[in-house]
Length: 246
Image 1 (tube, rainbow, N blue to C red):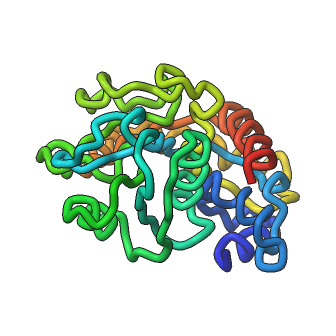
Image 2: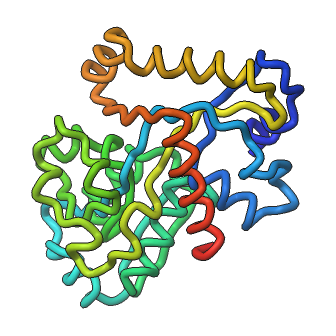
């Protein structure tokens, strides 16, 4: 919250840009107006680095093998990080949209701690990003049972994701892409057209560079680069959806 507020309120001199987490920024503005010292729709959007579609995971040893199994269950337990984070929003929104009988615990330190709780059997399912838990999926410790992103947000290099049903396929078309985590490059409001043009070009060039693509592959962090115009369009849709959901 402090970082987003600082970025929003900086002088728009072209010297300060940063990463805006969506939908967390929009959701925090709506849910915590006393803490959120920004107007999400007034940021200067310069591009987008990543779209991390969320996934519902269960332990590979779990009796729950599908969303239908979870829907039939009672007293389900799930866990996530702090309230207002992208992951916590994704968990609450998707759990409620699927009509699950669940109790959620907030405040886990990291996605690794959450997945270890899942593997131990402390919780029944978790909701985290596609790229967050790749190693645990590929090792066979956890199983993805629902992909909450849009079809074009499936990273091509993750073969295991191609067989995971989407929200639309599972009967929740209104949920598809709603809680996708986006990393937007933004500046404060009021940047001049010259400043905006400079940063849009610099960001687009960097996202297309061989060096960044090589890092993405090595780090197993799939990138979904978007131009400023594409990022603004997606941003507007996500912000509007958060107004309804939150």
